[in-house]
Length: 340
Image (tube, rainbow, N blue to C red):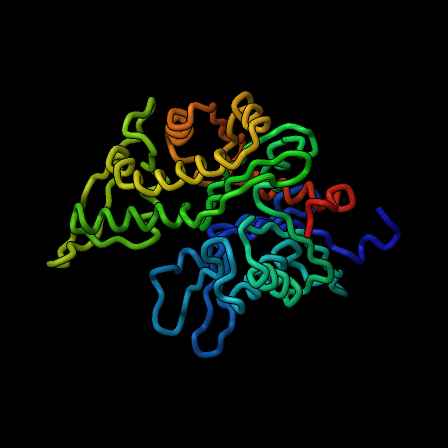
């Protein structure tokens, strides 16, 4: 710690499509949904994170809820800036005599374009950051689950987030080959909404679909400890009369099948590009699953059966990327080659 270290606040941000996590002093200090509620007339921030999520789908005409992130990148620049600024304030809720300058390491999808990188950098700078560093999500996930990224050893990371699924083969501190597809948690939620509409003639919102995914989401129709059926309530599509329908995990496994197939194909494409020596390492060590999508019941079994390679779910898949970003923040000089 330097003499003037208190003048600089160092934070690591996992700016996710579904959740934003902030790490400060090696601790997760903020873990909130990536959503803001603003006043339509004045544009002022009304709520952020969990409070805004509770308003989502229940607002009147003067309040608008916005998810600033779509498919892993910033879709609404102003809302993203409000969100980053508001979440940073949550670290120190008490007003200070002066605001320390911010040094931020933020993670980005590996398939980001220069325009998307510029949007992340600009939003962070407008929110008060003096120094902004960026690290690719798969690399952050690998650091977060304790993989030695500098070793001459191939590791495959599959990070299934809210907006994107990042698939990368990592060796010698770099990404050898990668795939970034926009099929992930949000797509699963859309699939469930579509399925309920077509199969049961019931209209449900995004929050209910998310709840179904958490309670009875599955990737295979035969799991060891099946969850109990989830009761869905909503209006009939045609008559608008109330309906109450039990949904089983087998139904959800069936409705998510197409999206999971696309993830399997992307993993296969990444494996095709992998040099043979690294392929052998992956075959021995297995594929590592991180991100919220890794919590889908039976997904590891399904991927292992499809590719004939062992699949390991990270210990804390939701926070793996954030922890890795925190490690990169502590060792900015050591991991200079990983950071943009």
